[in-house]
Image (cartoon, rainbow, N blue to C red; front, top):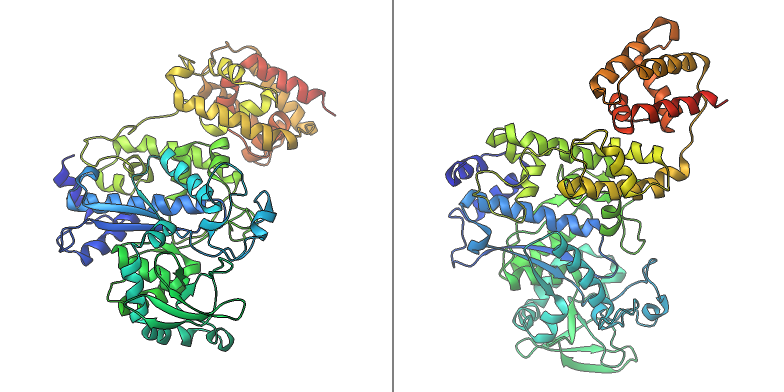
Length: 544
């Protein structure tokens, strides 16, 4: 496809990244800012706990909108017409100690101090708690190849780069109070201030009334924790702003054009939008997305640590499957736990296989097409990986490993894969080899401890004997489809009294594999080997 074809298709696409990018085109009909500076995308992160997939998804989804906009204006990533800033609010005061942090006493002793001024409880050599968490964030963003600029609030406040914007906040202190006070409870109104001074005595971020003495000089007056009256500068890292004011100030100072955020920040987005307008700026475009939930349907929290980490997903699934799971329906809540990983892997490969034969408008709605281009260009005739297939589904691989047992190793799995693919060489199938490793881990941690094969019922015993008889006369390399056909025929025979084929396959899964669901049994038998499968049947028939 040509760049012009892509531009035309992108501008009418109904896929959500392109619909979001359309809003930016309405903001800048010429596809660029009037002053020629790049269109700025931002993502925000509060490093009060370890980053998790909820953090990662915001960067991925924002990147997808960024690439969609570039497609619409005919820009390549290297053209510099867009920027993505990953911003860490590490000047925020620590309000409570997260549940999943070592050396909790370090944090207890430093409550209410800026996150960037609290010692690293992980003892990894970082200069602060925030620095450790910021490093973890950048580590997994870099692993996935995101093109972004990292900015920390600590650096912006301390270096004075936010000082002009802070003076503007001080000038408009009364305007901001008029916006915020009606939204607060009476008790909170008594102490609310847009500016949060940092105590010169304790180093804590204070929630106290503040008087603006001189906006141009940046001077403020407040009562410190010991009751003493303090007059000091609000500039150079000696204060920070309340959350909603801080967010608006950031939009104003950086010139942010697009930022998406979770449903829980809907009210914050409204108030920050009003504040940035009071400062003389403009609220960014943005998508309000639904939150991820854990397996119990509860909101994922950094402090609780009840969400999946990037490392956990990549232990049991592939990088591509993570992006695939995150892509669809950002306005719908998703449960996020290890149980969703196997299907995400297989669904990713199904969508990837379809790419080669899809028309351009369909490709733009295919999650894999967007993911393949998330960190690359838009003008290639075909993206790497279009039309690729995986020789074995992840579900089938998990069933194989489940039968081999918790002690199975990578070499053993590949020896069985030789029954199914022509060249069972891990070097020739690197993506499959990754999944062999993750399948072994998934089986070890979640399948093997709960695996229980039941004894077959009388009618199931007879059907299993019939299947064993059929397998006994097959050649070792009998095609999977022929095996599947015979399995179907056995399940349909009236003498075995199955109410439906579904009951027959459920019996096979429960007696041979120890699970309620499973793969196409013809494919599994071809992969595991006919003689090995007959041994599974023999073991099942001996079970009482």
